[in-house]
Image (cartoon, rainbow, N blue to C red; front, side, top):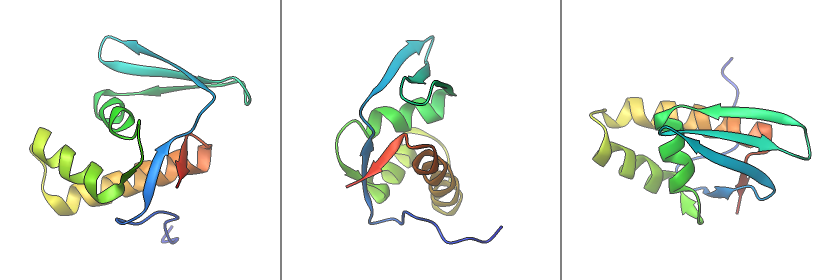
Length: 96
């Protein structure tokens, strides 16, 4: 399970285009028309989605989350890297 991440702290990322997204009571529901797949993001995932609406480094995303949530840097980095790498694997996030 210790596979290298595609993205690191200095990687610049952005939302992938071509997704239909809607806000549902603080959470995001997204549909990839191309893949015919539905995705749901909780409040934290939705916050990350908003942060990557424009090109931004992963480090900047982590800093913004640490300002908003009561989380230590190590935990935040680990969780964000895992989440964003899954998003890249699903084609929801693009590396700039």
